[in-house]
Image (cartoon, rainbow, N blue to C red; front, side):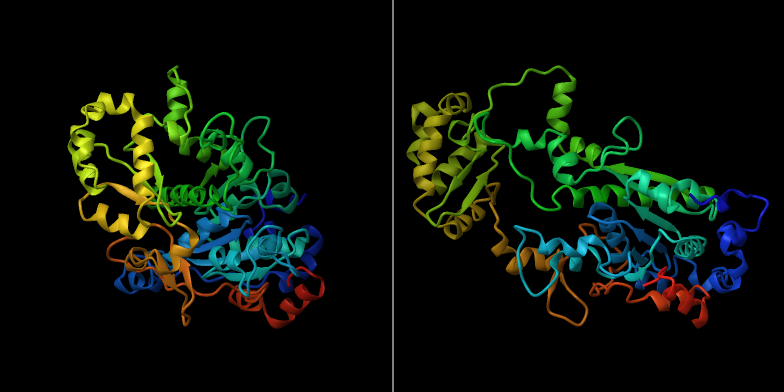
Amino acid sequence: MLRCWLGRSESRKERCIPPEHRSNAAMIWPAPIPARGKQQERGSNAAMDKGIFAGLKVLDCASFIAAPAAATVLSDFGADVIKIEPPGAGDPYRNLPNLPGYPTGEHNFAWLLEARNKKSLALDLSKPEAQAVLYKLVEETDVFITNMPPPVRTKLGITYDHLAHLNDRLIYASFTGYGEKGEEANKPGFDSNAYWARSGLMDLVRADTDTTPARSVAGMGDHPCAMALYGAIVTALYQREKTGKGSHVASNLMANGVWAASVLAQAKLCGAKFGERRPRERALNAVANHYQCKDGRWLILSLLSEEKQFPTLAKCLGREDLITDPRFATKPDRHARSVELIKIFDETFATKDLAEWRKILDGNGLVFGIVGILDDIPNDKQMLDNEVLVPFENDTMLTISSPIWVDGTKKVQPRKPPGVGEHSDEILRGAGYDEAAIKQLRSNGAVG
């Protein structure tokens, strides 16, 4: 492990250069980056036009998916994000579409989503020279994001203790599987196990106890977790506005999973008694249930004002007789005979396609939702109108925007993601490295 960062009596430049390389300091560590000028101050109208985080410098030293996605959200609002990845193959997440079971196609869909707007700097952080480059960048960085396992952070010299003393305004954003304390602190995890399975969600979505636990969808937990980490970063940035000091912020898959399951988890914490888990056909409330249409598509009813809305629903279904049917006269009657009512609804919804039912139910103000499928998304007008789906810069291909908007500031138009090390030379020059220093870093494999 490098110890150069411990010496407080040394200059910042010397602290960040391994002792064995200090004879080459002029080559490895050029003059410091100039301090930010007034033109970079936040809050001006010009800056807001470029995004609320224009000028915010972010290092994304992470992979798979939550932590990099938090950096993506920052980039959507104008932050300058540098993706740190290994030379050669780059971030292992680039390979996701090649894994068994994933969709195949011309474009790397996974990388398009998580790495948009970013610049790529290829560094082999196992080499002291590459660590020195990183430390140089950290001196002028606002946010450092990582989800590498704690032992790997120690090995590569990127723990909070390694970096915080280089820049007292640094926000160090840490993401883990199971938190940073306790016996599982170093345990690796993906959202499928630490978020979906550990939280109880994998069990809770089962229709009944005879059904096997349900698999998660790729990134299903990671993307909500990304928003949590983004929230932690923004909170720390606000604190920095008050104190002038950076901080260490953290989130993890396990905590976010339990938060997602928190309604029922809180019931368990309160000692509540749970009833039988019932399949759809035996649900306790027929007007808060899902039904299949003639074309095989599904919709879900959510009528909370049941006493008021049941007659309207009956009319929409062409079953006015249900309004006066003594079996279903009151809310308690309908709940007591929910199985009978579900069977009637099943037969009725099976007579029309989803599009027909959607028009009828929408026209009468009833609360329901379609059970969407991926084929719906590219042409979903509501998503397009609300900029949930947005085109890449100079392209017609769409991507999914981060799910927050702020009046008075624009998101940047998404830019296609970089190739491995596409911006390495540009970033190094911007940090003050001359061509000879860059050539030396490349020759010893520190930079790709």
